[in-house]
Image (cartoon, rainbow, N blue to C red; front, side):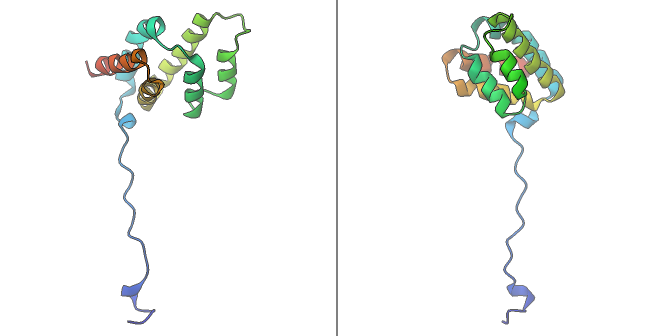
Length: 130
């Protein structure tokens, strides 16, 4: 075999496309409904560390740096509850536009790793499947 022999060309086999992630399988309309129905529960039991949530949402480009600063600024006229309402509204609106955001939010809740956030993630998934 010579180097010019076409059979001996050093090529890599074509790579297979990445399999779809779990996040990409969520329908925005159904996920938005589940999120809307669970908003009260999220506010009542939810996120102890709003900074963790905001950082993760920024990391996934669900919120902007400007919005992060607005939500985490403790010196605004908004109460912590009002800032959480605003954040949940942003998340819910984003889910309606793109179902993948629902999966990202579930992953963030699980990543926080408390019993409460894991339970919330489970409840959101149950609502989605109803």
